[in-house]
Amino acid sequence: MRYKYVLFDLDGTILDTLDDLHAAANAALRECGYPERTRDEVRRFVGNGIRKLIERAVPSGTSEEDIVRTHEAFTAYYSVHCKDKTRPYAGIPELVRGLKENGIASAVISNKADYAVRALCEEYFKGLFELSVGEREGIRKKPAPDSVLEAMRVMGAKSSETVYIGDSDVDIMTAKNAGIACIGVSYGFRGREFLESHGAEVIADTVEELRGLLLR
Image (cartoon, rainbow, N blue to C red; front, side, top):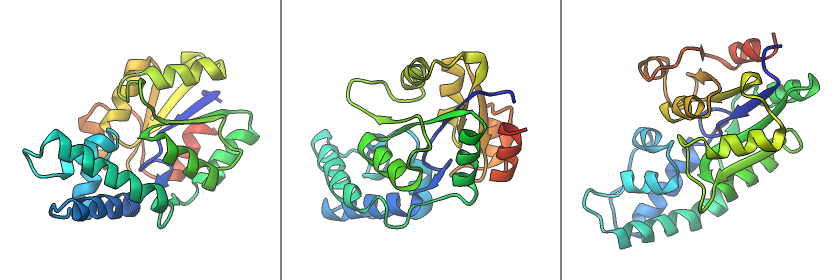
């Protein structure tokens, strides 16, 4: 097997979180008196953390104070409803379990708020990941490599034995900045054409294809 350590993005890679993110964004926008966004708009806004999602969702020219207020409204809603409709992509739990059974260590590194990352991993992947890391104060978000490098340090992972898997341009840049291999997945929030246009060299169109790349 080529990789001994597998690092996953969360949204659009191992979990389909879009419906809950869409609901939380619109709940926050409604509360703060702003127009709602479509599901496809929210899909395009995701990837750089909740703060950036809110900045993209509110009307152009919204004040910093009101962005903060909307962010707080999102967090209040999402912390309660982050598991309403979210589900693993078909075959992902079995894949992660297969990695563990084959002695391959795995972890989750996400720009999603840390409270949600931990709650969702506990709900759907209990005991399968070595660690799960979300957005935390004082730590640079992806595509900065900080969280990836820290996870590799904790796991004792070598760069040559590690791969990062994600569905967005942010994930591709994160892997590059960390000096590790990357596999893009086109079944998530972005498609194959988008990933190719942002430099993805290896793309899995299905979970089964991803399994073949990791457990060959």
